Structure formats: C-alpha cells, structure tokens
Amino acid sequence: CGGNSGSGSAAAGSDYTIGVLQLTEHSALDAANDGFVKAIKESGLKVKIDQKNAQNDQSTCKSIADKFVGDNVNLIYAIATPAAQAAAGATADIPIVGCAITDYAASGLVQDNDKPGTNVTGSSDLTPVAEQLEMMQKVLPDVKKVGLLYCSAEANSQYQVDEVQKYLETAGVTATQYVFSDSNDLASVCQKAADENDAVYLPTDNTVAANTGIVDGICRPAKKPVFAGEEGICAGCGVATLSISYYDLGYTTGEMAVKILNGESDISTMPIEYTDVTKKYNKTICDDLGLTVPEGYEA
Image (cartoon, one colour):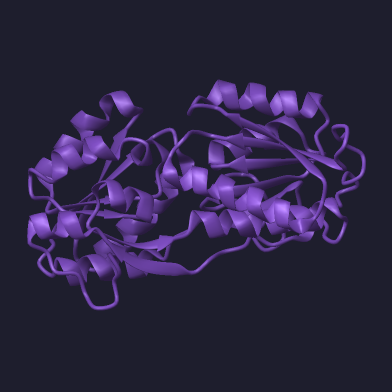
C-alpha cells in the first residue's frame, strides 16, 4: 500500500509498529483512541502501539511526528486535524490514518475526500449542519441571533462555523462568529457571545471540548442555551446535539489501518469514511433553562 506497508521497522515480538499522535486530552479524542486500539487488538495482527499526546501544542505535534518518522513506524494514527497536518508534513511515505478531522481536503491532507491521492486517509467527524440547525430551531423556535464560538487555531472549526453561518442566515437568523485564540481568552470571548445572542453554537472544537466548564459557567447563569457539535461538549455545557460516536469513528479508522498494514488496501484510493449520528440532550441544563427537547432525543 503506497509502496510502504512492509518497509517500516517493527518492535521485537510484533509484526508492526503504529505511532499514535493525539492532539490533546478530552473525551472525544480519548474515545477515538480507545476505538482504534480495540479494532487493532481484535484484528489479530501483532502490533506495538506507541502512544503520544501533544497536549494541544503544535510544535510538540511536529516533534512527535518527526520521531515516528525517525523510528520508521509502519503507520501513524493522527487524532485531530493539527496532529494529521504535522504527520503529513513529516512524511509522504509512511501511511497516515486520521480521526476527529472534519474535512480532509479543506485541511490540505488529501486531494479529494473520495480518492485521497496522498499517504493520508481516515474517518471524518463532519456533523450534519442542516439537521443541527433544525434541532436548534425546534428547541428555540424564536431564536433570532446565534453566536458561533470557536478557536482560531483549528481549521476544522472555521470550516464548520462558516457552514453553520450560511445555513442560519438562509433561515433568517443572524449568525456572528466569535473567535478566541486559546483557553486564556475563551472566557472573555464566550461572555461577549452570551451577552449579544439568544443562543451559542459550538462546533467540534478541541479547545472548547477541553474547557466546557468555562462555557457552562458563563452561558447557563445567563440563560443562554448552548448547542454543540458532539456529545462530549454537550455533556459539559450544551442543551442538545446530533452527535457522532468518536469511539465508533476510531474503531472504523482502526479497521482501515488493518487493511493498509496487511496490504488489502492502497491508502491513496481509500475514501474518507463517515458515521451515523444520534440525538442526545443534556437533561440537567435543559431543566435549568426550562427547555423542552423534541421527541426522539435521549438524555
């Protein structure tokens, strides 16, 4: 696969070594890691998994990716867009499978999401934007102004909020983007978003996911409902979400990795995979805000 599946070096006692590069620690990315490891273990392949976490630091992503290349691992599993971009920048030869990435093509990782044409493939956490907004309008029929809160360091978040903004404006809702640079200015930007809008929308943003307590501490007392792109964020500060399972995405990506390692598939022609969504709501916050969620949502 890509001329590389057999050429990496594996640790003693195993046939393959996989380097895992995870951007940061929060529930969604941890689940993506767990699902992947489970799929690898169930495959029967003898694999050594080398786990590394970049603690949300771009330069650390780069040094970990460079180390994996230096170690000549057989495959790199990159969790979140900045991790995959660092890995892709470090090697054009070693296969890279990604997870928790919204749009591979928009992030410059592949030529086309249906036919990558590079040494990168994986699964996407793209959420169904139109359905997310229908959900928002069902819960808040009178919503007029929505603040879109995200971190400037995350290309995927920018892509999502741009899509959400288009949909909301088509529906006659005013959508304003509120961008913060890191966790240090999240509170002040979130406060502004809560003050100026009827509700706040959060994409699948890693910095938000790791700091949901800050968002909840501002939005809930202000009686401003938060709608989230995934259930980890929703559990921390949201009222409802159409969520994807990052565990399932990780598992799917693990199955892709196995096919690449054993030579069944050529990475450059493996399309990006997607997953189904589930309707979830946060009972505690909905009760606090006096909101009723439509039929079919589970707590």
